[in-house]
Image: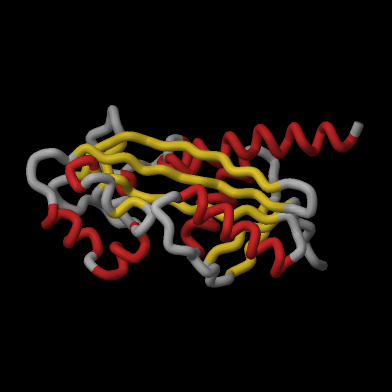
Length: 188
């Protein structure tokens, strides 16, 4: 029997989908997955990148979808890698980032969730401040082993409840509030 989904997460990143599914399940939203390598425009704006991805994904699948784009912005590197975080991670990884940093390790993660259906296109942004650790700590994907959120001594990889405080959680929570309200409004 085929499962019915409220909407679909479009990405080539299974880790992002799994996090998003757990988070949206907690809000009562059933999220499906379309694994697809979305074309990413070159832009210094995460929002512009996410909106373009969402529009393209909706044109391909013709179902309500969300995409997520995020970036790690390091103060002492003038916001680098920012919207180029995925490419930078693939090329120099966490070790490369750690080698670039000296004293100022302040950073933030920003997440943009972009939703698209046949009537709506909307984006939701959230951020979490923190610092870059001096070495990799814990096992996790992406920059999780080197990012320590504000008011913590542990990296995202070492925090068991990351999904309840991350930038992705905050953006998905904003999206969920809007989406559930939209569904209620359409039912009346």
